[in-house]
Image (tube, rainbow, N blue to C red):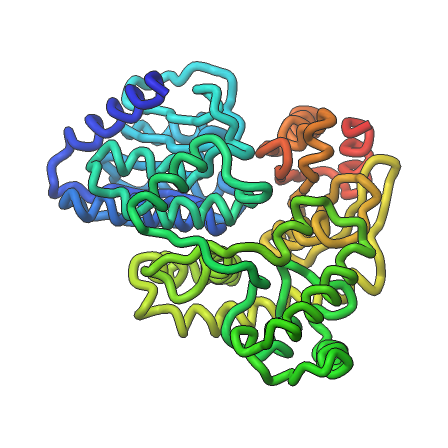
Length: 443
């Protein structure tokens, strides 16, 4: 901790060496963790009197980062990415701060004006113990200790990366304890992860959890609720104790048929994190942010973090449309079944961004037989891969980030990520050759 705090202080001093007329360039990822990481930086920069210009990137990063060469930036902060793009960042020839939790490249940086703060370099596990938003939060606190209120966004980012499963640990736990002590979060009662729409709509549009045979199927949801003698139009907070008990039992039974991991089952009905600054739980807020980011509404997603009261209704509409599209793909996949090799399950996705989300849902809620899940998007001469594993597989030694780096080394392209979640982009290779290579490396 002493080492990372010293490096954070060095990074803060680097930023503060620039005049307040500087517009700080912020580059982050477009999922919940990246969005909240960027929002934390925006709020912290604004409070210090700096202007900012933010871009939230999709994969692949190479094309997007190359655009920075045409800009005249004085300093750039990379959050929730950067450690896997060191060559490109060095080519920019610009002072930079990297706040990341993905596995870093094992090499020295060739520029003194680039400060890399990657949790893994300090013995802090970026898979489970800290998110990109958490790294941004630590930096924000170094800039000004009064930024503790941004801990709500840091915890939302960790939830977006599923680092809350089984309970917060490591630095995430420290942030949680701090937020609780400051009165910024409260632990609510045990309940389903739902909003304030009718139970018919909430279950029909439920993606995480994905209820087999129900999610995406309005008529079946209505039939199920009627069989339990629950009015489909009733809101969750209006259900009686007995109605909740019957509903919880029915949903648990449907999930248990697919042999879900214990940490996933434990999330179905649990005490939800609430905050006085949010109209919904942190978990639902995370879902809304992710939906906006994955829908291409990255500006709306960032705005939602900065002023939730003003942008929540607009974001909710985007989320509902996104869920309907995603559920249509998941229902088709549930009906058709996954493809399989000796070492993995896989499916084809129409878009890389959708495949990234689907792979996580499929890994957690579909019957995968103890194998990791890969999404393949073959489009315009490029193949995008997104893959997910369970904590059980990681504990047995699986490292998907290492697998994807090895695939990139063998076939060209780029690849990397976490042990439990990774991805890559490849050219001049067929999907058959790519799948065969992945299969052999996994084996």
